[in-house]
Length: 79
Image 1 (cartoon, helix red, strand yellow):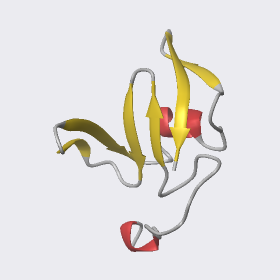
Image 2 (cartoon, helix red, strand yellow):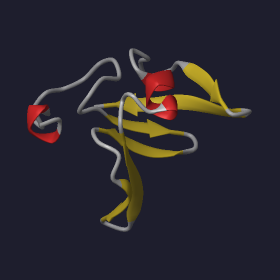
Image 3 (cartoon, rainbow, N blue to C red):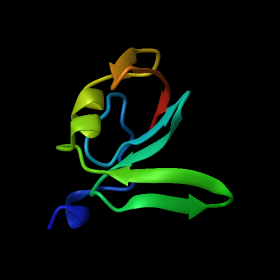
């Protein structure tokens, strides 16, 4: 099961399964494709690392940028 393989205590320095990624264009949990989540009045998107968008972020670190479907993203933090 993909969700049980995520260690919530692990700190991530590069984006991988289980990372919480804050970008200039949204907040993403790299886990399974659950879609939009609301937590403490903040919106997060739970996405699969094998999705087209998720695979663009894998192995990136804070400060890096990428483009997806014509939109630019900056990685603000990875935890």
